Amino acid sequence: MGEVTYKIVVFGNGGVGKTTLLHRYITGKFFLDTKVTIGLDIAVKYLEIEGIKITLQIWDFGGEDRFRFLLPNYTRGAFGGIFMYDTTRPHSLRNIDEWLEIFRREQIKKFHAPLILVGGKSDLITRRLISEKEAKKVAKSYKISHHFECSAKTGENVELIFDTLIRTIMRKASLLK
Image (cartoon, rainbow, N blue to C red; front, side):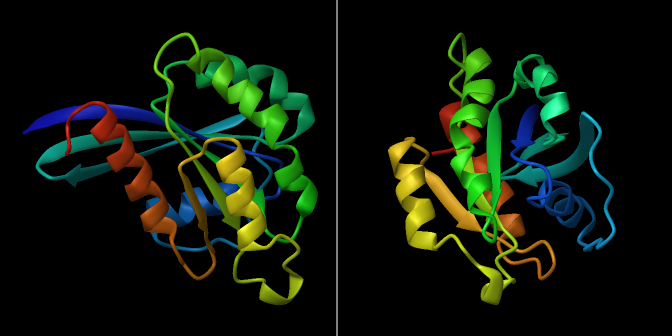
């Protein structure tokens, strides 16, 4: 038994579904009319995994170019990250280089935080422009161990994404086998 606090960051282009994913995870509800994240929002969730109490701080980065200069400092101290793209917007995945450089800049110095690749809006099947196969290939090429698609609207894979990331962090810290 013990208590830990983990900071994770959620980042990617604007409009890919980061804030709706976060709201769904924290509240269990889907909000259609979320507002553009100005710079950064932080949410907290308390949970317990295998007898360990966890305070999860989730940092939701605004995807607008004008806020990007802030991000390297905000990734400092992160134990994990979620890079999110929109399955209906190919450019949101093509920008992975720039986003990973921002995320990993501070990570190289210390922890090498685990990262998950997440495709949002999987419920928009008829508008899909990025195949799951293509996204898995991108994940592999960037040595990202996990890829999921999700829908904040339906709740598909939302819990699984965060559970996988938290358990990966805990295994890295030798808190889980």
